[in-house]
Image (cartoon, rainbow over all chains, first blue to last red; front, side):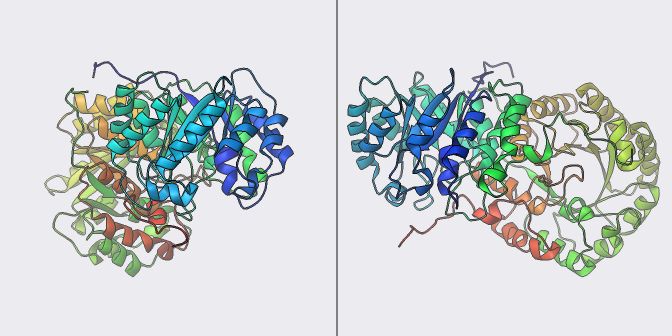
Length: 311
Length: 311
C-alpha cells in the first residue's frame, strides 16, 4: 500500500445550516438568534459559512431577513461568508451586503431543475451568465452548486458524462468553484470515487466541494470516499439539519460535527475546534425547537471516558 | 490507481439483531415471534444469523428462551445458525441444539471485561480453553468476538499491539474465526484500515469479521474502510437495533439493510435480497414496540423514484 495517496491532511468545511438547514424548518428563527448563532459558528474554525439566501421572501419566508442577517453578523478574518442567490436581483442585494462569495444553484437533471427552481439546466446556465455580468469586477468569488449530480429523485441515474458536460459549461462561463451535490442522498462511495477522480483529473485547478446527505446513512462513507479521491472541501450542516422534503423521516444533510469528528479522529486537520463546535451544536434543539440527527453530540467524542458501572 | 486492490466483489453478512439487538430491549419478545422473525430473516440471503445467547436467564432475561428459539426455527441450507455462549454450561446447551457455530466473547480491555463479563482477558482465555475441550470433535465452528478492539469506553485507547497479541492467543488456542468489535462506536476509518491490514497480513487464512456500531455516525464509513482493506465478513443488526447502554440516545449496531444497501449500490454482492430484507426490517417496529435508527427503510433505496411534486 505504498502508492502515492491523493488523500490530503487538511480539509475545510463550509457550514450550510443557516441556509440549507433553516430554509425548510417549520418555524422562522428570529433574526437576532440567527445572528448570534452564526457569530458563534464563525469562532469555531469553520472556513466558510453559507449564511442565508437572497431569494424572494415568498419563496423562502424563513430567510426573508437575508440582508439583516448578513449585515448583522460579525465578520471574521479567515471565515468567508457565502450566500445563495437565485437571480440577478438577489445578486445585487448580496453584493450590496459585501459578501465574500456567492453560491449559485442549478440541477443536473431537468425534472429536479423544474421542480426545485422552475428552470431546466440550460435556463440556469443562461441565468448564471447574466449573474456573472453583474458580479464582474466585484472581487466576489462565484461558486455554483450542481444539484442531483449523483442522481435525481424523479429521473434516477444522472450519467457521469452529463455531469462532466455541465461542469465544463460552468467553468467556461467563468464560475470559479463548483459544488457537486448529492441532493437526496443517492450517492454511494464507489460512484463518489469515480466522479471525484474524474473532475479532479480533468480540472485540477478548480476548487471542487462535495455536498452529501445522510438520507440513506451513507453521508460519512461518501465523504470518506471523496477525501480518498483527493477532495478537500466539504459542505456540512450543523446537527445534520436540513434535508429533502421527499423523504419524510429520513436524515438530512451530512452533520458538520460528525464529519469533523470523523476526520479529526483520522488525523485529518479540519481547522475546526470540535469542542467549540459541539457547544454550538448543543444549542441547536433550543434554537429550532426539535431534536436533530447528529450523533456525536449525543454520544460524545470517541475519546470520551465513561465511569465504570457501579463505581 | 491501477495497483492491485484488496477489495472483494462478494461479502457476507452475519445478522446479529436476534441476539445483540434483543438482549437490551425493554420488553421480552415472545418466543413464537422470535422464531417467525428469524425464519423470515433466513430466507433473505443472509449467510449467518446469531439467533440467541445461551446465557443465564437471570443475566439476560430477554433471551431466556434460547433453546426453544434454536430448536423452533427452520434450518436452511446455506444459512448458519450461530449462538453466543458465555461458558461451558452454555456451550453444552448450545451443542444439544445442533447449532452450526458458537460465538465466544471477550474484551480486549480489562475494565470492559470486568464490567461486561466479570472477567479479565486472561480469565476469558482460560474459559475459552475449557469450552474448546467441550466442543472438540463436534464439528461446530468456533468464533470469538473481541470487544473493545478499537477502544474501551472506560480505558480509552486499546493499543493495536495488544489486540494483535490477543488475536495470536485466540488462534493458538484453536479458535477458528475472530470478530473484531467496535463495541461502543469508537473506531475511525483510518484506524480500521490499519488494524484490518495488520490482521489480514499476519493471518491470511483466518476468517475475520468486523462488527461496527454507528454510535458516532461512522458505522458505514468504517465498514467501507474495512472492505477496502480486504475484509469480506460483517456483523450487522436489522434496523440498527442494539447498542451500548453507556450512550443514551445514540445509534446502535450498524444497520443491516443500510449496510447491504450501500454495498449493493457499489456493485458488491452481499448475497442478500435487499427488497426481502427491507420487508422484514419494516416489521421491526411492531415486533419491538419502537422506532429504529435504520435509514433505508424510511427513505427507500437510492434507486427509488419519486413523483414530481404537483403532478
